[in-house]
Amino acid sequence: MSGTSAALEPPVGATKPVRHPDAPAPGELLGPHYGECFGCGGDQPHGLHLAARAGEGVSITAEFTVRPEHQGAPGLAHGGVLATALDETLGSLNWLLRTIAVTGRLETDFVRPVPVGTTLQLAAEVTAVAGRKIYSRATGRIGGPDGPVVVRAEALFIEVEVDHFIDHGRKEEIQAAMNDPDQIRRVRAFEVNP
Ligand SMILES: CCCCCCCC(=O)SCCNC(=O)CCNC(=O)[C@H](O)C(C)(C)COP(=O)(O)OP(=O)(O)OC[C@H]1O[C@@H](n2cnc3c(N)ncnc32)[C@H](O)[C@@H]1OP(=O)(O)O
Image (cartoon, helix red, strand yellow):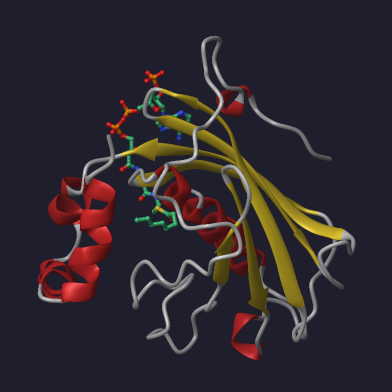
């Protein structure tokens, strides 16, 4: 069973997404947006270490290899971990729009089980933008980029100000991020969004 709920239908008047002129070039690795991110950060030993690459237009490809610490059933990836991989890939699209946004809604279809040791090949694109609302979709395949689809998702991201994180994040981590020049540089890149 699959399909999209009404909440993920772009409204009348939604427009096509526009790739930001300073977006990373197609093929360029994006790198983690935050070292402690469970999805992409290099400092999380049990994290997904998902690596995302800019595609053409407002699209992304990404890879994630399922490790033993990502199991739900014996030898199989946990569904929540797969949803995280989809969420992270979809979130990476915002680099191409140069917009700070968070997931408001994520709808996921789990099509086939995903064994430990498998590399998930993800592909995502923004389909429409309406004010602060960014509509997107993603698929995950195994056995290569043309292999069978094992997971797919549709999502709605909502644009936020950087204050969203400063106001709601735990103070220790916010302070550490503010003391990290690399983190400040990444945020500044987004603040110049027209
Ligand atoms: C830096 C990038 C990190 C990327 C990491 C990967 C992505 C993530 O996992 S992000 C973390 C998970 N997400 C979150 O923590 C978000 C928690 N939620 C929130 O903070 C708020 O609900 C937030 C910011 C999404 C929206 O709140 P707010 O700014 O007050 O906006 P609000 O007015 O409620 O909604 C704006 C519009 O979006 C719509 N909307 C908001 N949430 C939803 C939803 N869940 N479903 C459908 N529509 C929604 C509203 O209906 C509204 O539409 P319209 O403009 O047509 O009236």
